[in-house]
Amino acid sequence: MTPVLELDGITKRFGKLTANDDVSLTLGQGEILALLGENGAGKTTLMNILFGHYAADAGTVRVFGQELPSGRPRAAIDAGVGMVHQHFTLAGNLTVLDNIMLGSEPLWRTRSARTSARHKLLKIAERFGLPVSPDEKISRLSVGERQRVEILKALYRDARILILDEPTAVLARPEAQRLFETLKEMTKEGLSLIFISHKLHEVMAASNRVAVLRSGRIVAERNTADTSAEELAELMVGRKVERPVRKDHKIGAPVLVANSVRVEAEGKVKLDDLSFTVSAGEILGIVGVSGNGQASLGALLSGQTKPTAGSLTLEEQDVRSLGPRGVIRAGVGRIPEDRHSEGVVGELAVWENAVLERLRAPHFSTRGFVRQRACKAYAAGLIERFDIRGATPDTRTRLLSGGNMQKLILGRCLSIRPKLLLANQPTRGLDEGAIAAVHAALLAARSAGAAILLISEELEEAVALSDRIQAMVKGRLSHPIPASAADPQRLGLMMAGVWTEGEYAT
Image 1 (cartoon, helix red, strand yellow):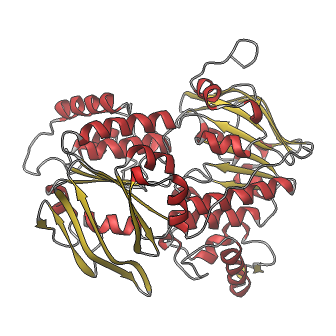
Image 2 (spheres, rainbow, N blue to C red):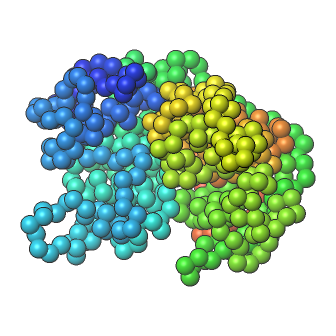
Image 3 (cartoon, rainbow, N blue to C red):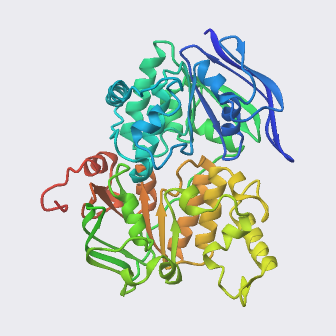
């Protein structure tokens, strides 16, 4: 295939850390190249160099035979390169249409062509099966809906080379399958793709070729037809990866009980007639397509919103009287859906984020003074126990990869031995090794007696970890079914709102 993109000897350092070490790659016209690697292996850094967000310390980037100037995103866009970022680059106070159009019109134009832009956006959205409301503000969208806008934003600019950094992390499998089917059709017209994904089934189904990064270096390249998911997983982490298996054990007393809960906000019903129970030593899985009320459920259990009807009790205590601080004091651990905006403060050090929710504990502060030595020792223990790579207690948290940031949040939650753990998309964007580690930690917390509410769009994850499963559709929940009865077809129907009369809530 004719090379449309060539990376030659790319090296990038951040202080003592070498993120990319003499990386060379080519991309052919009409090819789909998957880029694999553990969290922190240097994949996103490499793509940011290609797109001009970072300037390489050494090496060159050539697009359609022309060398790109280093560190200039506009030059990459003008050359036909589009990028869908793993972490959102959207203005929350603007509408979907405003974000799509932002930077796409010349400054000298006296009037914005919003009508034609709206028509183009809706046409692309329909073609790709990514429905959006052009006039909705970004701040009101769920994480999954924001990801759709990011994808549409790149496609709107008619890119010839498209970089997709975890593009389906927040999409349900049917949505992801539709997206890749459409992208495959576009490659027949000459579009070339690089996508980063930790979902090996996507890599095997969608890519022509796979490149594997480990510790910033290319360690293997394979034609997809000549490899397997098992080989790729081993190449990524340098060892064989096996996910832990849930074992049956005795379930304890109810910890969290919701009875006909209703939540209204901004004149809209967010959650309606929710009833569920999570008991000690149990994992209750909530599955559903993003945007069906999972974010509202997470906010409710975190004390950020209150029920407008019904009852919600934590060990028979009314949750509506607690608030966010009271929920934490009551023994609730929280892994939020969006780790960047809700899980950590990026500019703070790792040790500060590690104690953020427990700073007033006597071990960490005395008479208003922070005991930094104790805090840093605690953070060092979390780093070692949860294998938070590339981190020291003094590392700025924003410099961690997404996976290692997730491990920090998980460690912070589990170290307090929570009564209730809210795990909202706990493995989103994680590699196979990190997923196995997170699953093991959740199952260990279950064995120790924690009640765990798992919100996940990964059906395999929900089935593997949960004792019982409920589906969420438009703010409502089905009745629970045992995980042993939850085959993919049945769960797919439940997520689509097809609930059998008498067996599920209607």
